[in-house]
Length: 98
Image (cartoon, rainbow, N blue to C red; front, side):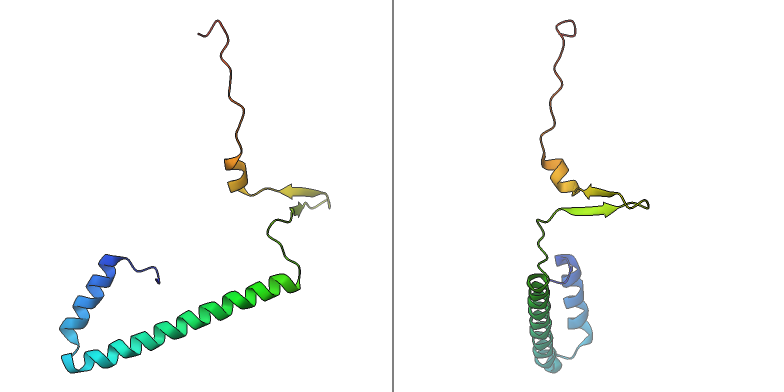
C-alpha cells in the first residue's frame, strides 16, 4: 500500500475509533477511498509518462551503461545484481588437501 504494516494500520484504526464520532466515520471512509483512488490514478499517470519518455528517447534498460573517468576513458558499469547472479568458478582441491 503506502509502506504501512498491518500493526501500524491497526493502531491507526484504533485511534480513529476512539477519537472520531461514529456518525462521522462513513464520511471519513469515503474521503479516504476518494484519496486512494486519486493516488492510484496519479501513480498510473506517472508510470505511463515515464514509459512514454523512455520510448521517446530510446532508453532501454538493457543498454550497456558506461562511466567516464576524469581522463575521458570509458569503463563499463556493471549492475551488482548481474554480478551476483553469475556463477563464479569453484576452487578445486589438490590431492594433498583431501
